[in-house]
Length: 78
Image 1 (cartoon, rainbow, N blue to C red):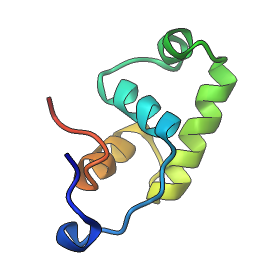
Image 2 (image 1 turned 90 degrees about the vertical axis):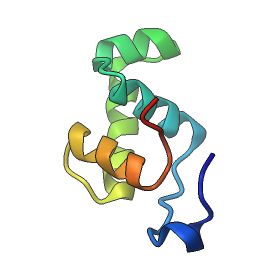
Image 3 (image 1 turned 45 degrees about the vertical axis):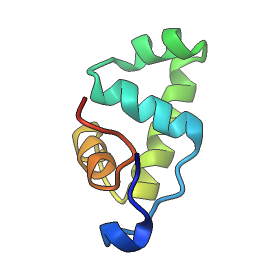
Image 4 (image 1 turned 90 degrees about the horizontal axis):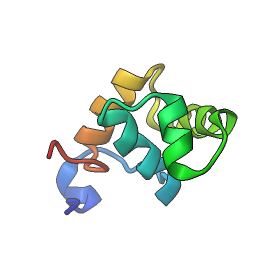
């Protein structure tokens, strides 16, 4: 369960449900190809989602995106 914005002190990035789903799969170690297959989308679409995620979270790569997603309570460690 996510904390309200005012409790976390970190602004929300307004990720879409699909972007959060992609992030969860990235955090679980899935490749773009595996994510595409699981979500029934193309690898190009996965890359587009990741680029949007990076921009919204202010990061440059997958590892940073996962760290920020954890900080902002988009994903959990379990």
